Image (cartoon, rainbow, N blue to C red):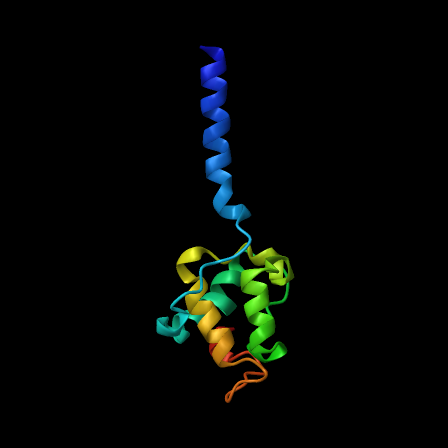
Length: 114
């Protein structure tokens, strides 16, 4: 009985921590996301849980942002810990649309984002 209880507790712990250990977010269909929501989540939402400076989208190219969101999450501020799967597509669209190699690069944080 003790073994079964221990196994159940270990399994529950592993399943509870797996979402935080994910190496990447599913970005399929990011083109249909909401840029404004992404801007808020990037500058305001993430800053609530991360003490590192949140870079402007123009600090990186589109490919660099894609790499960070798919294979190099550790390069994001606080390892991407302030980004959850529900808003990842919105944030990625915002960063993609305002990256340094986009038609509308954003090189400074909007005043509306504090």
